Amino acid sequence: MSHSLWVEKYRPKDLSTYVGNEHLKEKVKVYLESEDVPHLLLYGKAGTGKTTLAKIITKNIDCDYLYINASDENKVDDVRNKVKTFASSIGFRSLKVIILDECDYLTPNAQAALRNLMETFSKHCRFILTCNYVERIIDPIQSRCQSYKVVPPSKKEVAQQMVHILTEEGCVYELDDVALIVNAGYPDIRRVINSAQRQVVDGKLKIDKSSVIQNNYKLQLIGHLQSGSKLNDIRQLIADNSVSDYSEIYRLLYDEVETYAGNKVAECILNIAEAQYQDVNVVDKEINFMSLIIRLMRALK
Image (cartoon, rainbow, N blue to C red; front, side):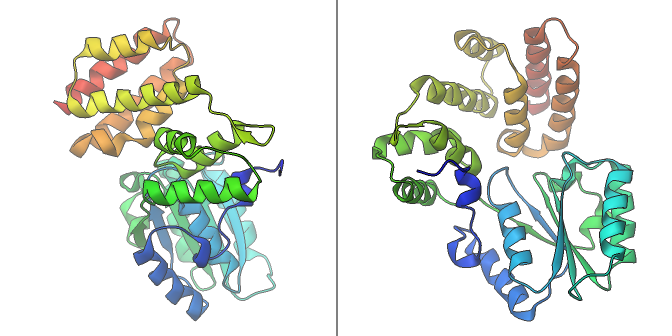
């Protein structure tokens, strides 16, 4: 059994092994056949294959490419310096492609600088941008890109992929346990694969039921927001699961905002960001979290 990260080891290398998004794969095939690609903006939920698709494109056309994760490098100088250095350098190939991952983390000033760079180096550079929330990308960038929504594969397809990985790794497993992991992590494929690898012991998939229950309570929280439950129901859910670290819940609320926020996505994102910022310094983290829930529930009325 391999000790490397499965999510990287089994990351699809070409379109034949990329699961789902058949309509989008047909578009990409045309780009690969032409050995060229326009500026692209790939958006959708976390863990659904945006970065994988971007890397498939760069590895299957004749180009030099640069990868930047904007969640780590999101300031004006970070982006400008890296892109300018790469775009201005002498390469082995005539085409250069820059993957800017999670570009919705870029500050507005950094996005404005990016727009200028896209124009300056447009003759020989293409940009493939990925983001969770396309509404956070400024219009001048969106207008310069072909935009495509990347949707998650079905639960059945994710389960089949998980069975394939476990079989390749020589692991013993029960299909019911695979289903539990898929249901807990879906639609984030990366989360499903990482969860499975963590729970393989001595070549056997051994489900940590407490971990699955923890994931389930997070899903219940999203369900409460979707259905307009009472505040006390959410407070009781948090109490029953003895939550003390809210960082993962903030991330979940952000990642899943489209599933519960309707036309209030932007307002909800701002509220979540404010609560995350305050969480670092507040004494009572539960009060800070419940204050966020109250603001979200008011916004969703």
